[in-house]
Length: 354
Image 1 (spheres, rainbow, N blue to C red):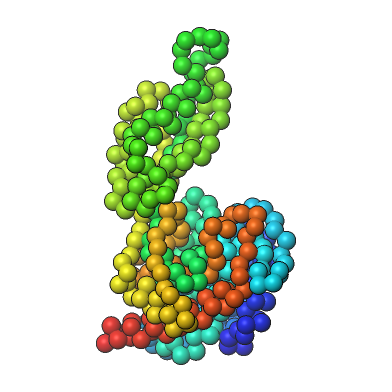
Image 2: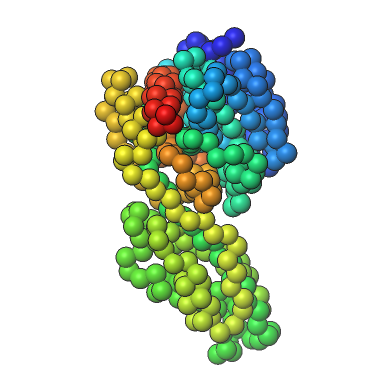
């Protein structure tokens, strides 16, 4: 088998959705994905991190990596087809985009180089261990496409970064009516101080501003822990923020648990152009956008600087929701777009290497 018909493409995604794969429990799905890639003509294996990695080489040309993720947030959604909609946990985020990549790689019979397809583990976790392992063990490809739900006619140019903070404070036991600050009050005050430092423009609605979230707060009079996540725009000075907040907190410890830089490419990036041409060739009107969350694009862009962008069918407003579903017509449209985009990249990269 060297490619997928529409029917087998739908069967591929349907089968992937039937296998639960919350973060840290992706192994069964990884085996299924490897078998599917082998059946489609790719050489495939599971790496040390648990990623499903397949590749197909059709000549001495450029290498393009297609990287999506296998893990999902917890929660069961019965897998079913209702009209044009395929329901299931991960149908949008992000088994749909990953299945699109597998089908496009198998169908790109005219590609003159090497295509690597990765189903990464633990993207939905703080550390993105799967993408970190790929970055560590693979040579940088000539171009990179990340599989996330952008919408079948839209290319994502970049994502905000993030800083995850944990503040822990202890106090001596005292009566609740005592005027001295209690641990729970100090944890709440830390959130207030963070908001003041970020200023009134802080918002999740804008790409160019930081967006704070109080992720959790637990504790009582003598001990309390608060966790904050700040989505950060390109160029944001996270170290200065952490230093300034620490100086305002006269008790307890503030720890930066994880930091990921924002990433963004321009509209003239070769991957963006290839995807836009492909969308137009399928009768769509290509659009470009940036996102205020983070993805494995951030993780790889910390070390890799080749042309890159994010693409995948699916409505991202359904991410993590109990209504998560993908329109099958858009999924099949996405496969055709990505297949054409690979051909466009092949021509561009081969021309550039001459």
